[in-house]
Figure: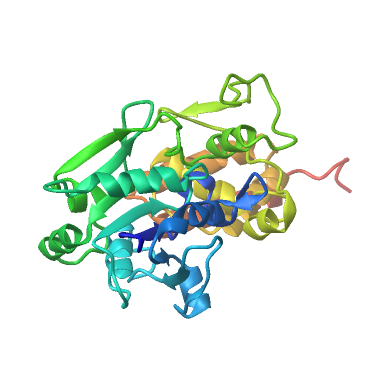
Length: 335
């Protein structure tokens, strides 16, 4: 019997809570997150992945990770334009189209074909969408099945899809919500999520006191903004090393995640700030370096914020520290 659904996998997110890592290429149970999702799509008539890989692949077909059809790649416009732009790009891929399309995130390592078949089968009659509901009662729109014509009509109403939130696209559809007792909709938004998924998959090195699910709550965490995050797992294997440097996270990765944690969108010159700290540490005193960096940030914010204000404040304090260094008394009595 010909499958009655297609699959659309969104793999182009910024992964801010993972410091900008190439999330689909991170591994769980020895396979990438994307490969695990594609394996669950074996029952789809065709699968389209929307993400940076499409540019490299030229949008051409290639063999899927599992039997069940080819995988095609495309990219949202503009790149990084958000989930609605990704949906629009995926639906625009030419070729035979099934009446039901699955919208799936690329970071759902425990999806399986049975769950996707169940979602697709629920879109019948007047129902326009079927989505999974996680254990906390949250609906997961990127673990759902949708009538293609309903998505197309909703896109037409929205207009330009770039930057639009997904809820504006699917929130008005007649939707049934299905329980998810197998926790197949658990995603990997944070390093804590990824570590928990690896424990659940029984990976060596992810041990800990675990319950029935094999997920431990014993990992060291830090709290913030209502969620738990932990230091990233040590990169293991070629795929993890492709997503992170051999030494793990870089300074730029830290700056990106710290800015996201503070709720700010500011691209600053890290080298400039490091040079400032070095000059202050050597010209004044080491403890003055972090305090001065705080003052620079505070001064920049008081003047409206932005990279230019940070640079201007940094330049003024660097000059001040150099004057202090020049005026410092030399060791021993003067000749």
